[in-house]
Length: 303
Ligand code: KIV
Image (cartoon, rainbow, N blue to C red):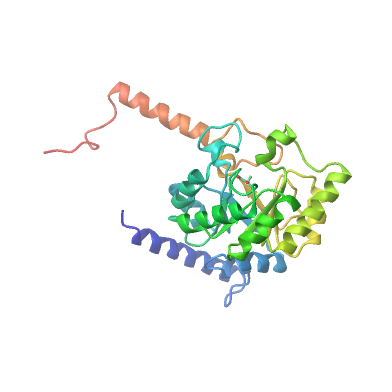
């Protein structure tokens, strides 16, 4: 495949978007950190928080969709271990392996021009000890060319976070609902509703910030708590089911597109009903093949 035309098409789109923003901000210099960032870095996200600009983040696991996500201007692409559910049909994220994550990250990396690419460290690759964590993070960075890694947990994994950071690998934290610990909690319900758990979550967030994390995902916690955490930190918080008072939002792409219809938590906003559209398209194709309508003369080659 020739990548050059796709690359220049994407630059043209970026330039058009830049011009649109410049026009709507009175011409001359673009006014936002978002529009200035040709390549999003961890520094860009911190600048966005300082400027009060919301950060956008979505998951991707394959080249074709990652290309669309990047070209649409999403700031952070997460190769989430939710690939375990979405791509592999597993009930939890626990079975995900480092090799699986690296494969998905390699596919996504080939598609990304602008976004910061964060790769989840899967269950069992960083909890054992900090040396194991560092080795796993180095494999992800070397083999996938991702830009950063994400780990679930607070004080209990801080030694691993610190060790990974010594190698110059940026780390994103993840607190609240941590799906890799599903068997400890037993449910995917809202976390930290009680004071004790809420105070621990705030303390964990401060520990992760002090250790050097560049951002923290807050999953499925009460909005007031997410607001308190976001105000207490200088690094950005990215919420999923954490309400509006965080520094950015993340969703699983297949949920937003309406492909995964059996998953309907309160926090999810679907922007498409792609499952229905795809069903209609596939049934249309089957009807056309069965009736002999497809392929037509125009869709056939002559000698
Ligand atoms: O794996 C994932 O998709 C995630 C997001 C839900 C934040 O960790």
